[in-house]
Length: 212
Image (cartoon, rainbow, N blue to C red; front, side):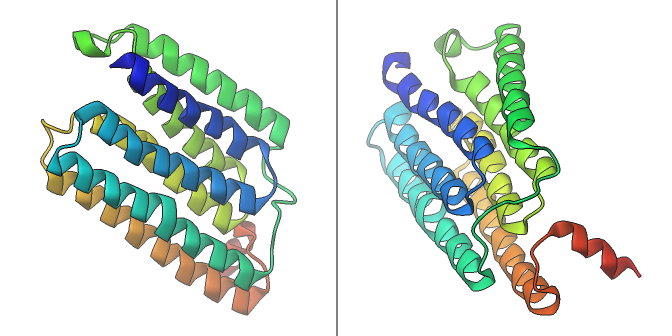
């Protein structure tokens, strides 16, 4: 199983570094979309072509790989922004933080009492590393669109862990996570629209002006 699953998980890890190291919002969105589509394929590789796995894979690819990235691209076009110009943390330190988080995830996963089928697999460390990458994007970027993509990547990390427990977790739990994500990005889109209309900026630092 590891020989089939680990290449997809390695792709997810490489995409973590890709989205952290680029300033182009279009590239960040595409990276998050490709990672979401890869996770849909991961569900099929791990559990075979069963009705539950196929339904989960289709929902994951449709929502994570197509619908949500399309919403973020539309928000980017409406706001007429294309780059993260002044992040809170620059790109090289962000890449270093991502590398440290990935290494720490592998070290931490090695000490966990994992099931025999998960020992030596990239499933747990890639899950933890992807969650850490999502937090790095949320904490280090100013643009609301990039932060929404960071939230998407963070949830991808949670999904990686959940897909390994598909038989043990009711399907409604997975659907609930996807719906929460969809609603969260939808609300973020509304916020982006109103902030851009009122302030002509998507810099989240400007939101502090609303406290006055």
